[in-house]
Length: 188
Image (cartoon, rainbow, N blue to C red; front, side, top):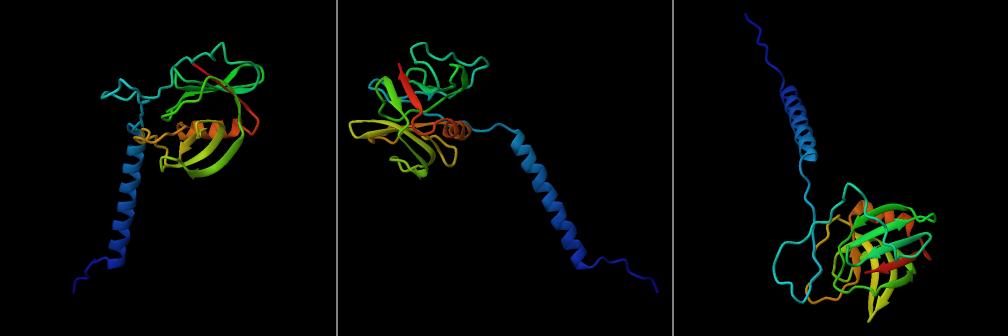
């Protein structure tokens, strides 16, 4: 009488489970190597109607710290370039990156980090973290932050927002650098 070489059902289930896990790992690795979406936003203007939103970029050569931005350890925010610099005490730029401004901009001038919050909900309803407040104008607070989910949606229509958003990694760097009483210089 021949003996059947049949595998028990638990062996089949285990084999299929291991195969499925391996397939998921391979697909996840491939997805991580692919293109990643970049969130974009544009500052609304009186003449703006339609068009592409500019993409925040990191250039090969870092942008120079603006000449009219003061001296010493400070955060420099350029309204025109939509860019921040974290400048150390020797006036060397330690990090620079582009940002997405809100609908209301601070006036050029000198400010100081006055308050920090780990995480809150922004005035546009987006959950944000690493919130670094430095000024206010007409009842609108100005603060640097990043969205918890890493996104940067365009500012909400018909809402005055003073939040200046950045990528998550840049928000973490700013949070570490921008302690209370750190100087902030806003330039054109």
